[in-house]
Length: 128
Image 1: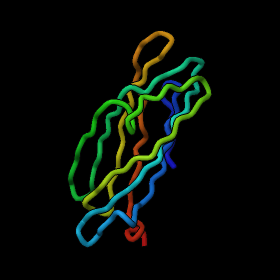
Image 2 (image 1 turned 90 degrees about the vertical axis):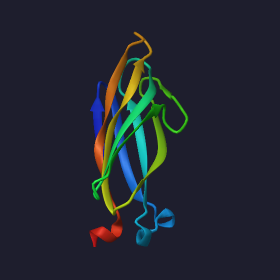
Image 3 (image 1 turned 180 degrees about the vertical axis):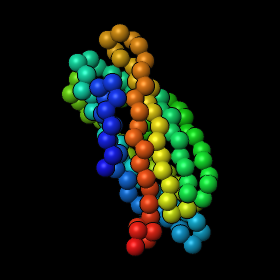
Image 4 (image 1 turned 120 degrees about the horizontal axis):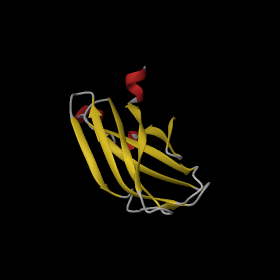
Protein backbone atom coordinates (compact mmCIF):
# COMPACT_ATOMS: atom_id res chain seq x y z
CA UNK A 1 0.00 0.00 0.00
CA UNK A 2 1.17 3.51 -0.85
CA UNK A 3 0.23 6.47 1.39
CA UNK A 4 0.87 10.19 1.26
CA UNK A 5 -0.36 13.13 3.33
CA UNK A 6 -0.71 16.51 1.61
CA UNK A 7 -2.08 19.52 3.48
CA UNK A 8 -3.70 17.32 6.11
CA UNK A 9 -5.43 14.91 3.72
CA UNK A 10 -4.09 11.36 3.59
CA UNK A 11 -4.41 9.30 0.41
CA UNK A 12 -3.74 5.54 0.61
CA UNK A 13 -3.82 3.22 -2.40
CA UNK A 14 -4.02 -0.57 -2.73
CA UNK A 15 -4.01 -2.33 -6.11
CA UNK A 16 -5.41 -5.66 -7.27
CA UNK A 17 -5.04 -7.54 -10.54
CA UNK A 18 -8.44 -8.53 -11.92
CA UNK A 19 -8.00 -12.05 -13.36
CA UNK A 20 -11.68 -12.37 -14.34
CA UNK A 21 -11.61 -9.17 -16.43
CA UNK A 22 -8.16 -9.61 -17.98
CA UNK A 23 -7.27 -11.33 -21.24
CA UNK A 24 -3.47 -11.48 -21.34
CA UNK A 25 -3.38 -13.21 -24.73
CA UNK A 26 -5.19 -10.15 -26.15
CA UNK A 27 -3.00 -7.67 -24.22
CA UNK A 28 -5.83 -6.65 -21.90
CA UNK A 29 -4.91 -6.34 -18.23
CA UNK A 30 -7.43 -4.98 -15.76
CA UNK A 31 -6.43 -3.61 -12.37
CA UNK A 32 -8.58 -2.37 -9.53
CA UNK A 33 -7.40 0.13 -6.98
CA UNK A 34 -8.86 1.02 -3.60
CA UNK A 35 -8.37 4.59 -2.45
CA UNK A 36 -8.84 5.65 1.16
CA UNK A 37 -8.96 9.38 1.90
CA UNK A 38 -8.55 10.59 5.47
CA UNK A 39 -9.10 14.14 6.68
CA UNK A 40 -6.58 15.01 9.41
CA UNK A 41 -7.49 18.71 9.33
CA UNK A 42 -9.54 20.58 11.97
CA UNK A 43 -11.99 21.61 9.21
CA UNK A 44 -14.27 19.78 6.76
CA UNK A 45 -13.14 19.24 3.17
CA UNK A 46 -14.84 18.22 -0.06
CA UNK A 47 -13.25 16.37 -2.97
CA UNK A 48 -14.18 18.28 -6.13
CA UNK A 49 -12.04 16.91 -8.99
CA UNK A 50 -9.44 14.32 -9.89
CA UNK A 51 -6.50 14.31 -12.31
CA UNK A 52 -4.82 11.00 -13.17
CA UNK A 53 -1.64 10.30 -15.12
CA UNK A 54 -1.46 6.71 -16.37
CA UNK A 55 1.69 5.16 -17.81
CA UNK A 56 1.59 1.74 -19.49
CA UNK A 57 4.98 -0.01 -19.79
CA UNK A 58 4.37 -0.44 -23.54
CA UNK A 59 4.95 3.33 -23.79
CA UNK A 60 1.33 4.52 -23.76
CA UNK A 61 0.59 7.53 -21.59
CA UNK A 62 -2.81 9.04 -20.91
CA UNK A 63 -4.52 11.51 -18.62
CA UNK A 64 -7.95 11.24 -17.05
CA UNK A 65 -9.59 14.29 -15.53
CA UNK A 66 -13.04 14.95 -14.19
CA UNK A 67 -15.40 15.84 -11.40
CA UNK A 68 -15.40 13.82 -8.21
CA UNK A 69 -14.70 10.11 -7.91
CA UNK A 70 -17.06 7.25 -8.79
CA UNK A 71 -19.85 9.78 -9.33
CA UNK A 72 -19.43 11.42 -5.93
CA UNK A 73 -17.93 14.57 -4.46
CA UNK A 74 -17.61 13.38 -0.86
CA UNK A 75 -17.42 15.66 2.18
CA UNK A 76 -15.06 14.56 4.95
CA UNK A 77 -15.42 16.10 8.37
CA UNK A 78 -12.36 16.20 10.65
CA UNK A 79 -11.21 12.65 11.40
CA UNK A 80 -13.45 11.02 8.79
CA UNK A 81 -12.41 8.72 5.95
CA UNK A 82 -13.90 7.93 2.55
CA UNK A 83 -13.08 4.83 0.53
CA UNK A 84 -13.82 3.90 -3.06
CA UNK A 85 -12.76 1.33 -5.64
CA UNK A 86 -12.14 2.03 -9.30
CA UNK A 87 -10.17 0.44 -12.11
CA UNK A 88 -7.65 0.89 -14.87
CA UNK A 89 -6.96 -1.19 -17.97
CA UNK A 90 -3.48 -1.59 -19.41
CA UNK A 91 -2.24 -3.14 -22.64
CA UNK A 92 0.87 -4.52 -20.94
CA UNK A 93 1.48 -6.41 -17.70
CA UNK A 94 2.90 -3.39 -15.90
CA UNK A 95 2.16 0.26 -15.45
CA UNK A 96 1.80 3.02 -12.92
CA UNK A 97 -0.56 5.81 -11.97
CA UNK A 98 -0.32 9.02 -9.99
CA UNK A 99 -2.19 12.29 -9.84
CA UNK A 100 -3.97 14.70 -7.57
CA UNK A 101 -7.34 15.74 -6.21
CA UNK A 102 -8.71 19.25 -6.05
CA UNK A 103 -10.09 19.65 -2.54
CA UNK A 104 -12.26 22.45 -1.14
CA UNK A 105 -11.67 23.71 2.41
CA UNK A 106 -15.26 24.16 3.55
CA UNK A 107 -14.27 26.74 6.19
CA UNK A 108 -12.50 29.31 4.02
CA UNK A 109 -13.93 28.14 0.65
CA UNK A 110 -10.45 27.86 -0.90
CA UNK A 111 -9.35 25.01 -3.14
CA UNK A 112 -6.11 23.14 -2.60
CA UNK A 113 -4.31 20.26 -4.26
CA UNK A 114 -3.81 16.87 -2.63
CA UNK A 115 -1.30 14.56 -4.30
CA UNK A 116 -2.08 10.92 -5.04
CA UNK A 117 1.04 8.81 -4.48
CA UNK A 118 2.47 7.01 -7.47
CA UNK A 119 1.55 3.33 -7.41
CA UNK A 120 2.47 0.42 -9.63
CA UNK A 121 0.18 -2.09 -11.26
CA UNK A 122 1.96 -5.36 -11.97
CA UNK A 123 0.27 -8.55 -13.17
CA UNK A 124 1.09 -11.47 -10.83
CA UNK A 125 2.46 -13.57 -13.71
CA UNK A 126 5.09 -10.87 -14.27
CA UNK A 127 6.36 -11.30 -10.71
CA UNK A 128 7.11 -15.00 -11.05
